[in-house]
Length: 470
Image (cartoon, rainbow, N blue to C red):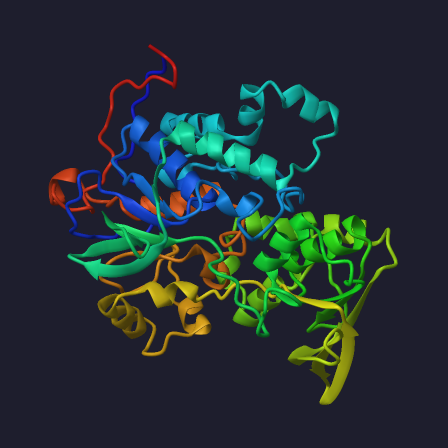
């Protein structure tokens, strides 16, 4: 048992969110039950166990916990390997200074408890840790990563509501989220709303689920086996989503692949300590010029293949690329597909038996779910027009949009303003700290209304036991 007395009653950071939805468990609603929701649930449990009153997490997910990492959900076949180091897990970077001084014993207590949700701890729980070490710490498959996430979600007690989100509306200073299908509907209420996940595929060209496929359709077809008529495949896109598609086509299926990219070549992601530092610790990020931040993101996280994929593709001669932006697709003779693309004012055309549009999801997909009040409030907060640039510039320290009457956290749009690690798996622990600490006011608990979501302060606890202690 540890005897800890915190010297703080609140986290470090900016002004807290205030919201007046008196839900029984003061929940933070997350769209999607993936790594971000599970990281939030783990940190929320740890903080509540040591005396902080922070919102619990409820995730609304149509496909189950970690659905996008499993086969059959549209983003992978489950056999692809994780592009991020697995040690960058739900608690990374394991720096709990948000919750107090580095010399405060409570900070060490939080970090130790979060280690109970780590990738190594999961492997230990399944007696697989030694084998993983002995095999040289290989990258897990997406399926293995999904199993880890599912284990952590259960350990954290994440509440998952099954259903597809239909609407999200601001109400009473918080959010009401409606989910379900044509026959059944349900609602959940929360202090705040966090949007995770890539949303539906949104490509550069119209797809037909036969010859011109989006990413989801490709993985569905790939798991069944591509038709014998397919020999040449054109892939549109230059990011990690496109990279996994190219690797699967060229190496697993022995197809000839032409990648159409907007830049000069298939760039690899920078992986030196200098680039990675900003992903793990974005201190100083905001002092960079906007142009430098955009260039950094472009070269390290967007429109680049991971070094793992680059090494794999170097072993084959089946992959080539053309530079340009796709402008149209036409079925030439009932079999061959013509892909038109422009570069430097010149029109070019290539032929393929199949096209995969792997340009990824629409970052503003969630706006279609917003009710009229929420949509108008969001538009007003960013200056009148909902654009990606406007939203990116409005993201605060809490990864939420500035100026809204109810918190809306958009980590997938937080790279430009707050740091490149928040949209991906690079800083899930820091993401959880940023979001949850925004609900804890710096004032004394007696200054905060007890029936508001903002009344989430740490209650000093004279003694606290570690997990499992009597």
